[in-house]
Amino acid sequence: MEVKTRTEKLVVVISIKGRIDTVAASELEKRISETIDSVKNILILNMSEVDYISSTGLRVVLSSAKEIKAKQGEILLVGVQGLVKKVFEMSGFSMMFKIFETEEDALKQE
Image (tube, rainbow, N blue to C red):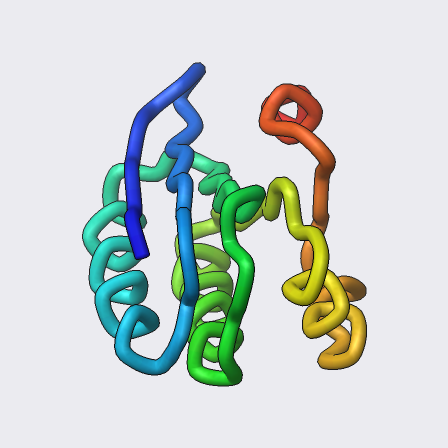
């Protein structure tokens, strides 16, 4: 798994590439936690290059959302597709998160 972080218009964007399995989930959780302190209102998780997410990965996304919500922030998801999209739909995550096709669409939420 590769994780890249950048800031755009006061929004932090974390782009994830690869598999979010049990091993990678702990690294992702660490990277998100380190980033949350610098988030003003919105953290975007770009998942357009994620081809697998485990239940541990789902837990990381959910716990990160709770952590940022406590600071009056929000996580927006971008590019959820394929098997990952099916997992989000089956788990109900697609109802809990705002999911956008592109980063540009998500950035309009700022």
